[in-house]
Length: 234
Image 1 (cartoon, rainbow, N blue to C red):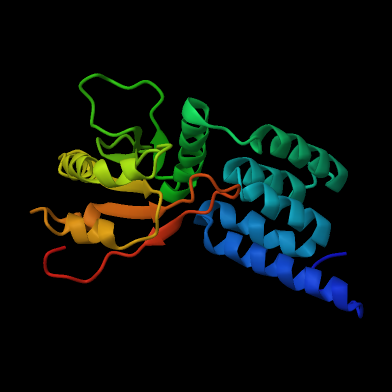
Image 2: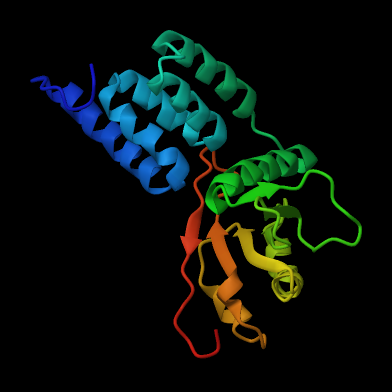
């Protein structure tokens, strides 16, 4: 039954409300070119919407592709359920060490594609003399302008985030200072303003830098933007 249909049962109403709240968050955090498909989910069964929202929590790109197929009649609810289950089982394994690092990088790359919008596309083959950054995106219209994504960690030992933070921020500043870099997205493990406080010590304009905190070892991949404080130094 689509979201919005009148149903007297309290449990069902609560389920609708919870699902609608998740859908609204997904709408707010989805690039403009994909958001129409997400909005159209309101006319689909609540079970299908729940599946899409759950899928988006760990693989936003695949979830939006499934949403597109669903709203255009290319995917049934049952096929959606099987596809999400298969994706969740392969993604939900608790990884560690290098495997966890690879998984985090993959999640960040998938999310960054949507965060940057259709103006950028990922660069698969890097040039040794190209712009710096762990993940690099170029302008889709051919302009020689780039976006770079930096990931702090992940490390097994929390103390390493303290001892290596200055080195990461110094590298981040260097990337942002590159003349061909238009935007820099930095992914960090904790939602603290300390990153911005330390960046204010550098003699650069931080307008190109965007900081997002991600719980590296949480099941759901939900980046939270760390707003840049208003300060003459920044």
